Length: 259
Length: 114
Image (tube, rainbow over all chains, first blue to last red; front, side):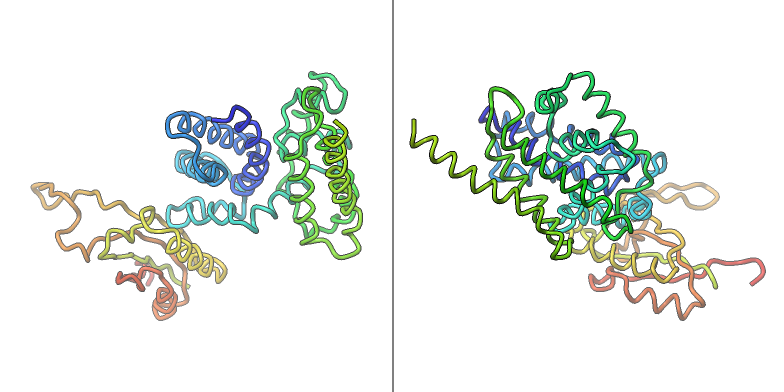
């Protein structure tokens, strides 16, 4: 197995999975969603040691996360209060599996990522906490990486993260994209996306000043989802990351040429 | 309004929930959502496993498996609320088990005052 694969996969997939699982479990159970994703990754690394990496590791991980979620729901069907709009369908074995499948389906999972970004940009949270949350939950950045990226101490980021997660879990539900304060949050979301892109551009760790995969992904993924929902006039600020993507490509080219 | 129990009977073991392909499971979700949207779904119930025993008579004779005839096996249940039996029967016609050769038995819950 490529030694970089787990890190790359985690960065790419964990945010999607956490977002979909938060839809299933409800935002109050954000920690449970994160645990399930961790479990799925552990299981993957364990199994792949023997079987080799499957052709589509992302699909494998998603299936593992779904199965794990179903296990959790079966075990704690009555003990845990799940998302109100999902609870009914998770209660019964007639519908639990297809209800989970639905949350992971292509369009839905993109919407969940976007909802998660908007939820992280909660007006009650200070701006730096919003960024830290998005970096951690949606982009799979570790506390140390975020600390390095924001030139801040590990302990400080850790505190900010746990406070932010608590605030997020205390909100009744994930942000609904049709909510009245969509516009209020949109500017914070734009700022967060811009900073995320910067982060991908410069790279968090000193050893990896440039991470093309994560930058490209972040620029493509949240951007696409936002443009799906936002009216035309709102798209403009998002064009910036794309522009920087092009520039990045040029710069890469020229560096190679110079050396 | 009255309460009715749907007893889902199926002949094909593969149609039991949890073992069927996802496409048919999605139909269950759609049907249940339809019932819920109409305010009919009182309790979504559960599908039942095929494993079971029957205890019978004053001698408490225990036999394996619920029934010898597989078409009689109850594959699950749910409880709905409907105006009357005719309404409950109409709603049962949307059950995905029917297109796979199963049956829905619609039974009114007995009420002492009725």
